[in-house]
Length: 194
Figure 1: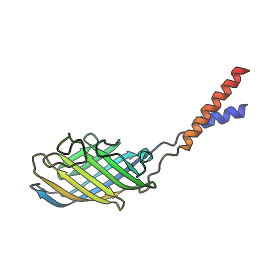
Figure 2: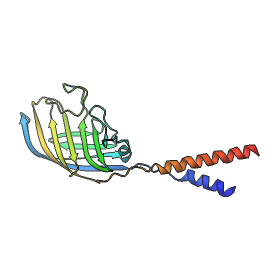
Figure 3: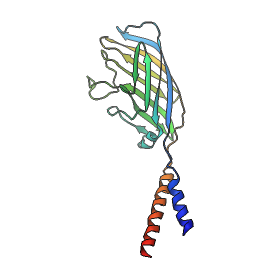
Figure 4: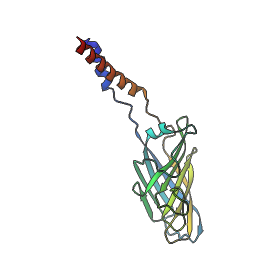
């Protein structure tokens, strides 16, 4: 009986496979402008986004997590380009796309009030402080940035670094935890009968 109790307690002590934060860094280089977007000195930008790997477990049949209307949980974010700055208080992780655990698409965007795009936060609207930066499976992507009071947009290329494989927490440890609880419950029940 003691060994049974010890096994149950060990199962309870095994920590669940916690998801871990994963960080993706990027740089942006100005490629072009449209409209009357003013460009000063310093045309290169940089930033990063940090999210929890548990988001990968939420991927639907297409491998996509998130949509254009509801931001995803973002642990940390920073983006500086053309004299503007965003962080997790005014920008967010948008859509993630996975294929067999491999990240094939990532998008970060500014959080702006609904505009002519409707409720979609992933729509860069001229005349607002807004941006979007994307990453594809090759680690490259695009960036668009607009500024309030300016009828134009800055267009850039993005280069990303970060892990390709995003490890999803294993549900088996949660089952082990549940088995430990069930074992302790059965032990208690047997003691009550005796």
